[in-house]
Length: 66
Image (cartoon, rainbow, N blue to C red):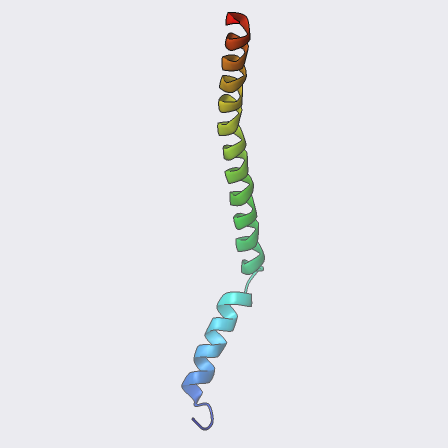
């Protein structure tokens, strides 16, 4: 458990290069995640609209019957 060998430092260096190297891969990934969440929320909102409309139509039919 003493010092770190050269292999440990190489592995750490490769991980750092993968995460922070290039043109900001982490920010690109986070941007993709944000777009995915927005798309998911939009999909949920679109699914709820027909249900709400169906409930309003059913309530209106009940009022017309009474």
